[in-house]
Image 1: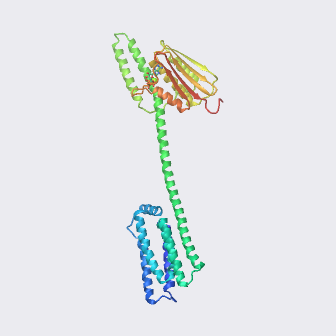
Image 2: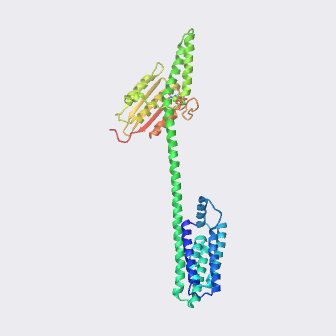
Image 3: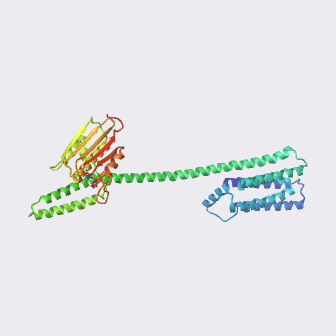
Amino acid sequence: MPPALRLALNGLLVSSLVLALAVVVGPGTTVARQDASIVVALCVLFAATYAAGFAGPARPAGARRREDRAESVDMGGQNLGRAVRWLGAMTVVWVCLMAFHAGFSWLAFPLIVLYVQLLPLRLAIPAVTVATAIVVAAKGVQTGTLDIPHVAGPVMGALASTLMVFGYRSVHRERQARHALIGELVVARYALAESQREAGRLAERQRLAREIHDTVAQGLSSVIMLLRAAAAALPPDASVARERTAAATEVATANLAECRHFVCELSPPPLVETPLPEALRRLVDRSADDRLSTAFHLHGDLYPLGAECDVALLRLTQEALANVRGHAHAAHCVVSLSYLDDRVTLDVFDDGKGFDPQLPRQDARGGFGLHGMRQRIEELGGALTVESAMGEGTAVAASLPMPQGGTS
Ligand SMILES: Nc1ncnc2c1ncn2[C@@H]1O[C@H](COP(=O)(O)OP(=O)(O)OP(=O)(O)O)[C@@H](O)[C@H]1O
Ligand SMILES: [Mg+2]
């Protein structure tokens, strides 16, 4: 039972008992002296029975709170049996007191409160009705009449007690529901904050992984390729030079493997003071060699894309060119940057051996390039397509929406 209701009930019961006792055995009473001592004994028994209902082994506050909740909404099983026995005993003592004097009608009110609070409706309604009927009957016997005021008083009292308990119970339930809701909200807020932190951490790790891949790893790949080409071009008797290039290749290969595992922040130096088309043109020019001819085309009127889009397109071009040089065996490669009305597109074509884009490589040794490109472009609301077939070259096409705020 909720503590506030228990306190109110204690007060109601003690005051009703004292009042009734004063009326019944006080000065000017009609009760015989011998009966008076029985009445006092019954009052003591009634109070003791009432107190016994609250007695029990001390329980932790949390357990008590849980029990209170269970009591007010579910009076099934053991709790119901205990409540029925307790209320039955008090009712019997009360009926005995009523047999002596109708002044004990006062006690009907705390009893009715207990019926409504502790019993399910199917038992509480008959119990309230019987208690009210006993009070009405006792009044009738005492006064010898049964007119409307004699009936209406107890009935109104019973009704008021019942409604009061229902009102209190609904307020109490609402309070508990609110507390439970607040608890759930607090838990949900922590869970949300935690998942946002986790998502941020993962996004940052991915970003750093991409940066390492697109910068240090690509640089080291080029170094290794150049060293291998240098070793192949050495004259047969240059054994010392061959040994040193082999050692350098080994170190670069080891560093390439290691740098894939490192996380570090890198800024995109080519874009610091250079517009994107210019940075791309230089990159494309630098990628040409005696086996690969490259070209860069710019279409449309330039508008600012924002640093994130600039970096994404630069990195994409770097990776696409590295793939052309590393995998395509192409003779020609064309990079086109187009500023359209609503988006900007970047296309990298090569006439190399092509591959099956449905089977991207993604293992411990690499294969992060295409995946990283797509991820970076999609994060900015764009799309990436890779079209290729064996022997038919490759076309990598990225499209980014024009940043909000227009072309100004
Ligand atoms: N232009 C291309 N021509 C031919 N094959 C390509 C081309 N681009 C990509 N590929 C194929 O797709 C695979 C996946 O490319 P991706 O860039 O994802 O990984 P990678 O280049 O192998 O490794 P990493 O980029 O991580 O160093 C490559 O291994 C290659 O087989
Ligand atoms: Mg690659």
